[in-house]
Amino acid sequence: MALLCISPQTNGEEWRDLFCAEIPDLDFRIAPEIGNPEDIEAALVWGRSLDSLKDFPNLKMIASLGAGVDHVMAERHLIPKGVPLTRLIDPAMTAQMTEWCVMATLNHLRRWDDYRALHRQRRWDELAVPIPWDTTIGVLGMGELGGDASRVLAAMGYQVRGWSRSPRERDDITCFHGHETLQEFLAPCDVVICLLPLTPETEDLLNAETFGWMKRGAHVVNAARGRQIVDADLIAAIDSGHLSGATLDVQRAEPMPDDHPFWYHPRIMTFAHVAALTVPRTCVPQIAANYRRMKAGQPLENVVDLDRGY
Ligand code: NAP
Ligand code: GLV
Image 1 (cartoon, rainbow, N blue to C red):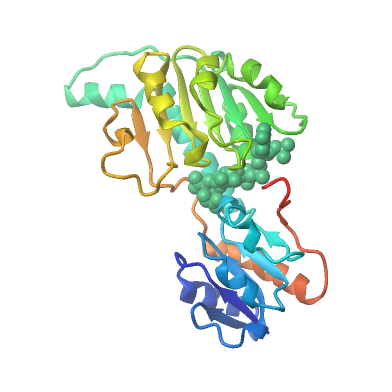
Image 2 (spheres, rainbow, N blue to C red):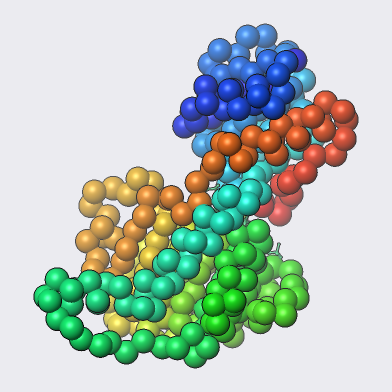
């Protein structure tokens, strides 16, 4: 029986070496070299690549090579009934994401761009910056990634509030849940960080109305998915002076087209979907452990709730 890598964007050879170090007798195949479809028991997926799953009658596990599964959910009809989908929950990914969110927050709050401009002019000026406990940071999504970013930001002294779907209790963070609390949640935030999964409920969530609920001068940080922001509404909110700017790791179309206005906007900084990369070395052991559980007929870990969509 075999594990098949069908992710077009993944270096299958690198994953094969790491998997075979974990499970020496593993038959690891890389699409399109599938061999006998009846051999395939597990599939590694990333990007839209699910067409072939229907051909594997013995498939028992699908592993997303990322934390988000919107790429798989977009092809949910191609997931064979009853086959569990797992995702990555990886400390290395979480640490990278927290680091990136802290960077985006500090660059804004400590006015990196303004100081760089002064540096270029050889000007020794002092600019006003807020003290941490007078600053409110809102984290949309209090899961693996938002939970950790909010913990670190709270430890740095900021007033941190978190928003989720279901109730959460945290000593260090003011927690809100449900769409009906979103306006109250956003109102005092100086920085709003989006770490929500992309689902029908979160698509276009950051739009003219919700930007309007943010306070004047708020800075928007998106490290989740580009389709959670209505691009034109963001630009309008910044151009009107209501928002101070945005730091965006993710975009609607990736890579962003050359003519996308985000490239040219002086108050928007973009990154190439790099906030938290999948590190094969740290991710293979958890997928291999799930593979062993699957072989032993045990329940898998990090299973996605297909109805919830994340
Ligand atoms: P997670 O553990 O599943 O957490 C998701 C959080 O969002 C949970 O707190 C959940 O609420 C909340 N949520 C979901 N739908 C909601 C809704 N409709 N209203 C309010 N809250 C809602 O996910 P994660 O591991 O933290 O990852 C989050 C996302 O980050 C991924 O889905 C992916 O898109 C993105 N990501 C980006 C990068 C990058 O490099 N830019 C890397 C990795 C991941 P509950 O607590 O109530 O369930
Ligand atoms: C990256 O965006 C991921 O979801 O892992």
